[in-house]
Length: 443
Ligand code: S3P
Image (tube, rainbow, N blue to C red; front, side, top):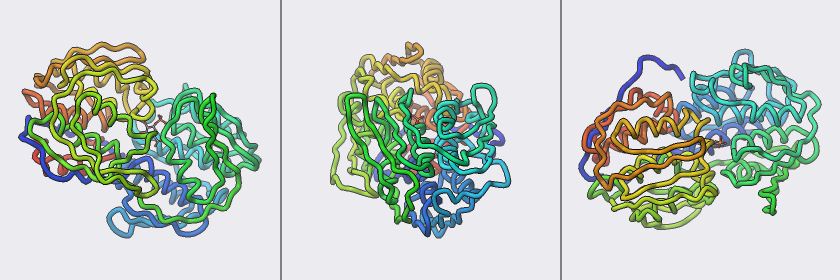
């Protein structure tokens, strides 16, 4: 993403939020729809695609590999795919901007085609570890040449004669799992990924939807996912559901802004994604899960959320993977709770768009909140409704850090400014308008 002059944004204490928060399409599912669409033979039609910068960068990348990707209207796209193994060699560097999901999934998708591809990204993405993906891809026969620690810019030379792989993911990561499965598409035989802790399963669901043979077995050692290689993927009609990670921001704002009462339609209840919601309910949140149904192959419900008095809780570590992107906003909400909120088993937060434990800890301290942290833990001492605020917080090119502090500033005593709000456009371009439309004061 082009990154020019920083754009500070300030949130001031607002009156009650009311109305409907229709958040945009799911980022994880949007990336996957474009990539699998590009690997199918024929035309995939997508509605509800997230038009955030991360996903737009993936669309541009798929064009560079030879797919025809066309926008027909807001959220309505088509992808004319080239088939499994049909990627052409891009004639320029693939720039995935801020997106770890984009770059890691695309690396997997090209890793078993005999082409050379150089990847890069913005200053945040260039700091993030890629060895977690290039290590398993090497087992297929893919070569990689990156900076120290496998960092971007990095060149991959896809395997000309790939072999199938059996791989146990060393960290709970849907990106790693998905990269291996996408690579397995163009390898003969069965590729197997074993994950000890379940992570979001959008790839498995969508691969099956596109006609791949994919089987998930729940065993004592974790989920064993088996993919039969070299299928012909059939183009699909994909209706992308709304993003539960984006929904988390209006939901959490409504809980801490006095008098709020909002409706957030179509929030995923996929158990690999929805860990924030049981956590909020345990904290005493008044959330009604209305009208449960299926949308775009995902279980969803409409959430009616009313302002609530919250208490601190201990989040079980085995829930972490199902709410990994929601810890920053949970930490913001925890500052308003009565008592201490303990988040353990969260060290993966240190390798997201920023070191999110550090970014939240420093920002919360600046806003007058006491925190404790270690490598794998964040503890927030809640102030029972009265958070001082009155600080400018560094967001380190991290959209979720920016939005979390704007939520916090909407309920704190004094305004909170984020030093650069530009990154919000990676996942939730309409965040400010949507929040202000419900009564927030974010400018
Ligand atoms: C994602 C997986 C998660 C998550 C990211 C999206 C995905 O990352 O944090 O925002 O779409 O697969 P990890 O796989 O690194 O946990």
